[in-house]
Length: 382
Image (cartoon, rainbow, N blue to C red; front, top):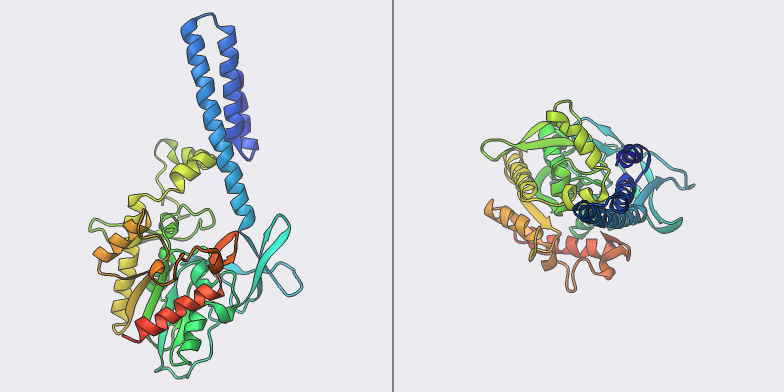
């Protein structure tokens, strides 16, 4: 047992999948104890212990293997026209990170050394993906788009992203702004609105605000996204309203009662814990996400009284967590457009609407369908 404990500590520190090796060490220790003891009760307990840690180790290996495969598939790299890596994002005090202004290049996604797809992107001096030409003037109405990679348009060229297509389909009568970015969530939308970043960029009359929501944004808003360690942190106050409380990495943002922070850091090394606990969407996560959306609508209403706030919900609204989020937003009177009512059967996750069979990001066809829906329904009947 002592040897297993020593080996556990060493594995926890030096091996990338420590809990697999820890389970092996303890299983061997229990097996040895079962052979060495003469007491039937102790032998039975040791066999049960070996079985239990072996099962846990098996699940740990299963989730570790699956997570590695997912990360390997969705590894996007910003490169220039010569294939050299370029800096795509930069730290941002309000949003955690943001696109680098005046960046120009390609986003390439690889799997096992094979290029799956790549797309052209151009970031303007305002730090946003470029938009199509419009009629000009400060009195022109405009549309603001918020969200993560699906709003930004990962996997499609500038001209095929939804904000660009809306601008083209309206023949320049609306100026469009894309505030989305890879990995963003609901919290970045509210932070951009509250910080004055949107007001600094927008030089027109916002008439519509569209936010593309996915349930995983609830995890991101709760600070559990592995890539967003410095993002804006929101909590619920006594009235259930989302209020800013610094950033995820602020000292004291997470209490360290009885070494709980160290415990969480160790548990984060477990792929089983991450999949079943950390990456699970809890009701409290949806409550926070819905409150952030509600607060975003309030800020939009205060600053742009003529702007209509809409949410495009890219989720299955017939099952949890999509149904839970839809119910919360409906209860708050939010205009919600389920994606399954926009993209025809067999649904938005069908292969013909993906940038690649291995990647669920929407392709140009899906972006165009959403843009046409916005133009032909929401804008037309405003």
